[in-house]
Length: 463
Image: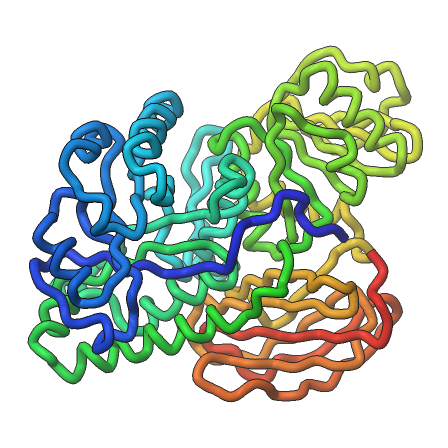
C-alpha cells in the first residue's frame, strides 16, 4: 500500500453557483464561497458587499474579453470553464488570465462530472450491441471518483474542481429542483474524494431563499451540515492509498475501467504515461497501462514485473522484449508472459466490458492484496487515506442509495481502535474490531449517506 506521490493541495471545498441578481447576506447563508458568471458585474459587486468570496466563471473563448473588463479587487479567484475546448486552447486561456490577474488563483473546471446517484440498471456495449442488465443485478452507481483521480494526475498542481448538471427526470423536480438528500450526497461525495465542487443551486431554491421561505432554509441547513462534516476530516490526512496504478495518456482510454475500479472498491492511483518514473511504481502491486509505452516506459514495466508485480497492457499491440519469455494461459482475450518474479498480461484491444474487467483485476490482485473489502454494501464506495506517522488510517464511506444500511468492512492492518462518525452527530462511536490474520474487520451499524472511520493501531502499520 502506498500513498500517491503527487499530493493534492488542501482539503476540499464547495462553491455555490448563484444566478439570481440578488443574494442574501453571507452571514445569513452561512456559506461564503460563491461562483457567478464573469460578466455579472453588478452581482459580483453586490455579493462582495454581502460578505462573499466571489469566483468569476469564464468560458475559454471569453478569457480575453474578461481581462479587459472585470475589476481584480472584486474577485477571490477565477474559474476557467473549458467546455469542449482543446488542450491548447485551455492553456492559452490560462496564460491570458494569469497574466492579467497574477495575484488571483485561476482554476480549471471539469464540467463533465455526473450527478452522484444510484441507478437500478447498467447498460454495456458487448460485441457492438447495447445490453441492459436485469433489474435484479447489482445496482449501478454514478460516481465521480474516476474523474477526480484522472484530474489529479493531469493537473497535479490544482485540487480537482468539478461540477455536474442535475438529472431532473420528473416535472416536479424540474420545477422545484433536487431533493435535500441529493444535495447532501453531492457535497458528501466531493468531501470524501477530497475534491472541490461547484454546487448548482436550483433557481427555485435560490428564489425561495430570497423570499425567506422556511422550507428553503431547511434545505440549506442540511447542505451546511454535510459541508461541516466534510471540512472536519482533518488537514493531517495525507493522500488516498492505493496499490493499483492506472497509467494513461488520455481520459478517454481509461475512464470507464477506472470508474468500475471505484465501484468495486479497488483503491487506485492514476499516473500520466508521459514522463513516468520507474521509482513511482515501486510500492504498487498491480499496474494497468492504457497507453502505447515508449522505450523508457517499456523498461519500467519490465522492471516492475521482474520484481514480482503484475502488469496489464491494454490496447497497445506491438513487439515488446517480454514477449520472448514463456507464454502463459490467461483467458480467451488475453495473452500473458512470465517476467522474472511477475507477469505481464496483454489485452490487444480496448476494454469492451468494464464491469467484467474490474472483476478480473480484483481477482488478479488476490485476497491478500485487496486493501479493503465491503459486505452488504453494493451501493457504497469506500476511500482509504493514510495519516502521517503510519499508526492511523481514515476511511471515507459514501452510500449512494441514501438509505441506512449496516456495512461490514475488512481492511488491511492491525487496528485496536475503530471510531465512527456521521454528519450532525458528535464524534465518535466506538466500534469493535476483530483481527483476522493481516486484516481488521468491523461493522458500521448505520450508514445513510456519509460516514467516516478513524482507525488507530498500537504500532506503525506496515506498508
